Length: 248
Ligand code: BV8
Ligand code: ZN
Image (tube, rainbow, N blue to C red; front, side, top):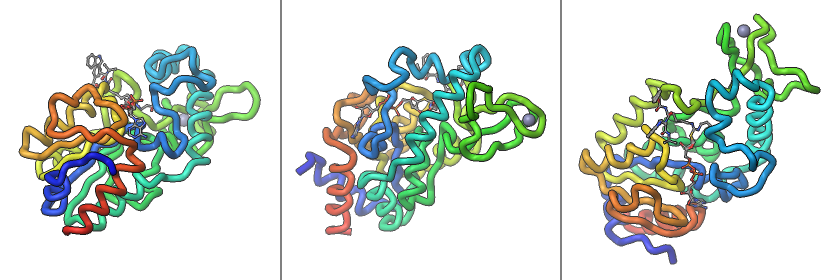
């Protein structure tokens, strides 16, 4: 039985508003590699070397291929019980927001409707010159050519937030509003190393939320929150949901 406290269950069951910040760890059990995953074709590159504008302009083909490869993985996978449990929590509670750092769209696929995508979505791409949206899958051009905009010939890029880029204002606002009203904030499957996303549980806590993280190991914010539940998101979240349902 995953080791979450009765206090967390009761606070969630009584919450008028709650939220979750999620990271790559919640999608790991769907088969989407996390950023810290050993192995895989890109082992020699760190995501930070690929997920920025300079790397893209320096070698658009390599970066487009990396995202096309990740998109192909994401297009094949399904949400896992962790995603479904958060979608169920949204239906069970009065007000529940998922703030995600993930770009895989799996929360929406699992049925969550109140999702703020802080770092964009790998299923979308656009032209860096005319900003016209590109059809899904456009980053994987056939052969060796570079994926270009059919309208103006500009380079196509994934609609994700790269290091050094600002986060989408509307999504950040939604996340901030959620931290203002949340009685409980779950931080699920994130190493909490990348800002400003990693500051979200702290913001919620500063506004009075009870903050619990669910991770297979303590994250970088483990000593600044109320509770750390060690376990897989796909195990812990369904058990937590059952416990909340039993008393809600
Ligand atoms: C910005 C989208 C303003 C793209 C991503 C120095 C100090 C502090 C900050 C900075 C600094 N220098 C620069 C910065 C800012 C920088 C930053 O934070 N850098 C870090 C590395 C120090 N941030 C930015 O640049 C942001 N923009 O600040 O704009 C600005 C402008 C100009 C100059 C300065 C500032 C933009 C950041 C967004 C980058 N884009 N992703 C893409 O996907 O390709 S980041 C990406 O990595 C994720 O989106 C996520 O945010 C981040 C961390 O990943 P996680 O999701 O946490 O995944 P990770 O693999 O790390 O960990 C997985 C976790 O899951 C682990 O804890 C593991 O234990 C756990 N787990 C595994 N399996 C399971 C599990 N848990 C539960 N169950 C399981 N089964
Ligand atoms: Zn264009």
